Image (tube, rainbow, N blue to C red; front, side, top):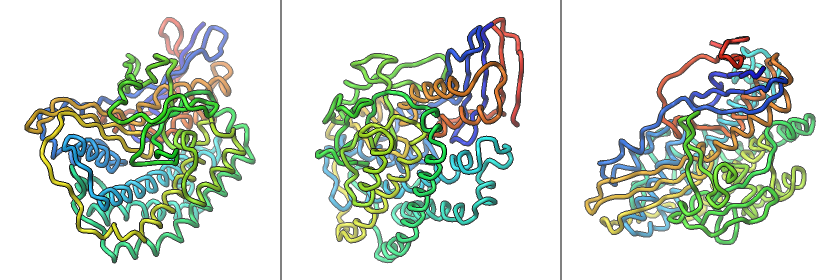
Length: 475
């Protein structure tokens, strides 16, 4: 008798989703599906707006990563203006993105995911959360909050506020960094380094004590995609696209933003509002690829900063060489990226360009299409705009990092379910591991679909005739 298990909604992620796990007549897992139950309308209601409004409008796609949309939108707008932004504006945009990566990765690691592997898979639901972390390890919780605050303050110093700053604009940015704010950033770097180092040591200890989690929580082959600099160095706000395989080999390289659609297709599945991008030459669904911290570390030749490069070398030596394939190690990759961000922030603090008052290139509509690509915390983000001669938006395509991980999130749920589920009885710790398979990716579902509604968590076993065989509920 075939059965179906439903986890509805998945908890401790940004947005609302559910997971269905299908059992065959022997009680073995035959399939798993990640359903996004939110509906997105941003692309459609941007039509008819003016190009100049797009960075501020699309930043409202999400309250967690508005900076990512602000920057990708500005880059798409730069292309339509056919301008090269001033060096100071480029460096300041990069600084804001480094702050965004830092604050978002800190939120994901310390607040959303750490309760699972620090408090324990078997811990009660009421304890397995950020409050549990505060009770068990108040110093770690405080340090995580302050690290996130550091990244948010960089955003605020540049954009005037921490959430939805209307700062990056077509052709550049509105304002620079004051020397007083520069001094504050410099003063807080030592503590941020210490927190990141402590988190790295802690997570290394966790995976050394439980290496089976690395093997069982979403380890599988796929392609990987990210931006890299022309020399192959880790990149977050420039460069060209590169695809690599699960052995570390380069599949496609030096792809410009404008040519992304030659390599990336978007499939629609009836089981989810979230689209499923794939690598076109391999087709759907064989062209599954991953983006985000794990992918960026796999795709890049090196990080480009001393401390992060040393960590990358240790990480690769321990967990697979050039290509690390376990989704559980997204957490490890996030911490290495935070370290790289801190080193790059520190370097920018000594760059005189960040105090320049030449911050914007002025121009009108010179091209009718522009594509902006930037690395958001969760992966590569595309904004593709078509305008008329007056700059009125005719069409918009936004390919969100979470969507690009959709096929991989489904595969991760399947692999975890196969490793831990044996029959119709589903223990709490197993359900939490399946959920954690999604949390590894740190999905941002409001970005990828735009939210409508919320629901309690419901897990059902459904027989082949549609009858409910068993049900569990979390309100």
